[in-house]
Image (tube, rainbow, N blue to C red; front, side):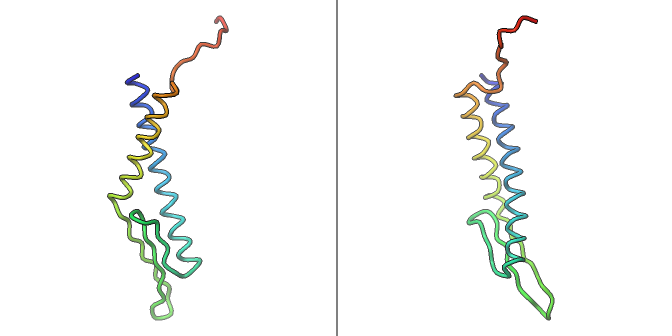
Length: 96
């Protein structure tokens, strides 16, 4: 059970990390395309300004918010794997 919990936490942390990366890229691109401020509250904020005829993008990450997203995904996946018994070797009944 401990191995399932650790494995689930690791997989969930990876999922949370990649979700944070995707959120950062999509926030910056939406800000650039809409030429406005786009934010995910307490996680990421991106704003667009035009200064001297040139576009400026400002990206402000909230690192505690990003770490909390990673931790939430890690804990949720850990709970899921422990309760459902995933990441466990199941016998299929086929004799090898």
